[in-house]
Amino acid sequence: MSGQPLLSVRDAHRDYPHSGEPVHAVRGVSLQVTEGEYVAIVGPSGCGKSTLLNLLGAIDRPTTGSVTIGGTAVSALPDKAATHFRLTNIGFVFQRFYLLPVLTAQENIELPMAEAKVALAERHERARELLGYVGLAARADHRPAELSGGEQQRVAIARALANRPIVLLADEPTGELDARTGGEVIALFDRLNREGMTIVVVTHDEKLAGAARRVIHMLDGRIVRDEPLLRRA
Ligand SMILES: Nc1ncnc2c1ncn2[C@@H]1O[C@H](COP(=O)(O)OP(=O)(O)O)[C@@H](O)[C@H]1O
Ligand SMILES: [Mg+2]
Image 1: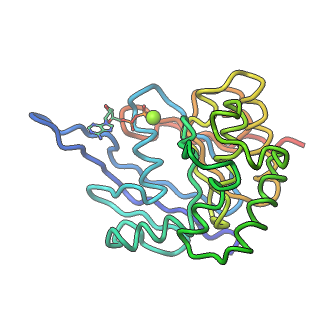
Image 2: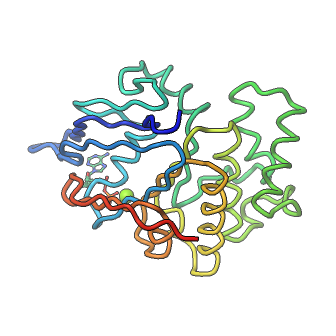
């Protein structure tokens, strides 16, 4: 399906109701992302980056306009169907990791597979494979509190990949990390993209934005610049 847009946003607006004037967080965004792209969304705080990413991941729906992911018009899906679509098609990574503290690294990675009713043996095998992929095979039995921030984010990335999503979305994934551990996350995203994963990342981190192949600049709920970067060797 090369050349076909994997993600397509058409004239999306997202208003948050608010006492008095509603907040116009996204104001008429149209955007297409092709399979295999690595896109960074940048812009000042409050300009609508997270709101747009949530629309792209079917976490939220536009007030008007439409969002299509892999041929499915997700903005038109009822809530339950949207939740199931998200579980099996979208990998989401958050600034604050959101791992469950009572579960081990391995169990955190297995959780979305359990929700998707993947068989136990396959869950174990896939989680171990993912722990190896993110370089944490030796930390399988550690709980989040026994992991560094960078390790927790790598577990969260492995969890996001568990159900083999068609796209990986990340909101400020290095925002809580120091330069070195942030660098590990950047290297991991780079490897994933080289292996074919489509990635859209919201970031303030210039190193992370510089690793993407295309940078979309937002201001006041709109896209004001959309620039492809030269593919590096
Ligand atoms: N749930 C919400 N309810 C009301 N206003 C919100 C909500 N979420 C975000 N906003 C407002 O929408 C605008 C865009 O927010 P956001 O998408 O989080 O920006 P960014 O991620 O670029 O910092 C901001 O003015 C923010 O205060
Ligand atoms: Mg944000």
